[in-house]
Image (cartoon, rainbow, N blue to C red; front, side, top):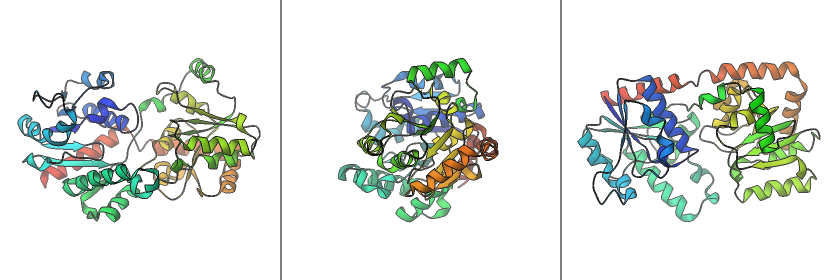
Length: 377
């Protein structure tokens, strides 16, 4: 069997879809050493991102062979890949980041799958430009209506695909995401102390991780924080205009000195930042899956998510959940966790148990089961 992957994000994106793509490819290569995995990359803008994958003997990085397409990688991504798939004898092509080549059906005999992560541009259209919203919609709709099978990263996303694109439910399989194994490993006290110094982390803090944008709803945590004068809030994520709203909210409440937005935390330092937190809070109004919830559980940190999207799938019965519009409700749940040692310990233990369901092996086995079913027709 030869399985081909869309490697564009794996080769060029440090976070988000890049992390997911590299995670899937690595898990599959480790779990199935006798299967060949071809990773299609139009252009390596950051070769270091693929270095770990290139060490696997069963992983081949495939780049354009046509002299023109070598210089126009976007055209290769959109139109050139199907011809390469036929030439290299692929059985399956898996688009890992919401899209498929426009002419994927030209690859006769090659089954196609696509992973859809979320439909945020339809659920929160005002956060996208008109062009981006419609361009995403065209690409996602084409992928969903063309693929032989759709992988949704949560049941919530599967429902969105069904409702928005009228795709029959039998054509959608839910395969949950996992998170990097580094979050399951305990950091040394020396390393944690080094990270604390590097980012000037407070002694006691609530943590939230993710791009600081409107749907993440981070200002809700700030409003709840006013009731805990001994605590700080550390937010790790890329800033957008919404970061100004978060800071304005903190200023209005007189707690600016206790709200810290960190944009420069590296992936290697992030597990330590999680493990030093007293509580993880993620009141996002919409997520495709919510990997930070899982990262927190793997790190042994009690977590509070929001109701209304997929976070209850990511956190299961290990986490508490709050109304994303009610700061008082969040404050009450934060107080419960911070003041009740037995509840805290129970949440930590349940978190480890829940996170154990999202292992590398579980993801790889689930994907392979889908692949085999697609090949059987």
